[in-house]
Amino acid sequence: MNNVNTRPIKGHLPVYIALLILVLTGMWMLRRCTHPDNASVAAQFLHPGGDTLAVAIEMSPLTYAYSGDTVTGFDYEMMKDICRIHKQPVVFHPFAPLEYAVKGLERGTFDIVIANQPATSDIKEKFGTTESIFTDHAVLVQRVDSADSTGIITNTRQLAGKEVWIADESSLRTRLENLAAESGDTINIKSDPKYSAELLGIMVQQGDIPRAVINESVAQRLKTDYPDLDISLPVSFSQFQTWFVKKNDDALLNKINSWIADYKKTEAYRRLIDKYME
Image (cartoon, rainbow, N blue to C red; front, side, top):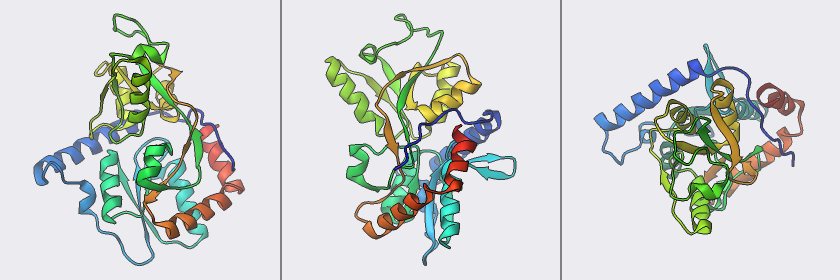
C-alpha cells in the first residue's frame, strides 16, 4: 500500500471561498425555507438507478472544486479516472456539510461518500471504509496573533477549557473528547452543519471563532493564502484518508478496493500526486 503525506496544494483560494460561501448559504436557506429542520438536502436527489454509481463528494480544494469552467480535485479526478478505466457509469453530487451526504448514504440515495474524513474506529463502526487513498493528520488552526489571554496554544493539554470548532459529523470529535479525558478537564467542542473544514479555517483567520481542528491537507492550503494562521500543532497521529460506503455493502466495497489498489500502482496516480500534493 502506498501512503502519501500531503503537502500544500498549488493555487489560491479567493474564487473557491466565494463559491463555497454562496453554496453553503444557498443550501442553508433552502433547508430553512422549504424543508423541516431535520430534513436533508440529499433527499432532493434521486439515485440514477441501474449500474450507475451515485457519488456524494465534498466541496474542498483537495477533493472537488471549480477552476473557471473546469471541475478539479484529487479525489474527483481519481474516481472519475477509475470509473473511466472500468467503464463504470458515475454521477457526482457535490456537498459541503457532511450530514447531507451521510443521510443520503443511509437512505440509499448515494452509493459512495468521498470526504476529508480519516478512517477512525468511529467511522469504521458506521460505514464500510475503502483502502487508503492517502495519509493525513489533524492540526489545530489558530491565529498567530491569538487574542486569547493565554496566548497561542503549543500543547494539546492547553486545549482544556477552550472552545474548539470542528466540521459537523467529523470523527475528530472523539479525538478531542479523548484529549479532554486525558487532561481531566473539558473541551468546549462546537460544530455547525453550515460550516465545512475550509470555512472554519477562514472563520479563524477572520476572528469569528477562536480556533478549529481540521486535516493538515486542508490547513496547509489555507496557510498558503493566510500566512497569519498557525497550523503547527498536531492533534492526531497520521491517519488513513478513505472513501466510505454503506455498512455491510461488501460487494461494492470489495470492487472499489480492488480498483483503488490497482490504480495506486499506475503512473496516472503518481501524476495526480504531483499535480495536487507536490
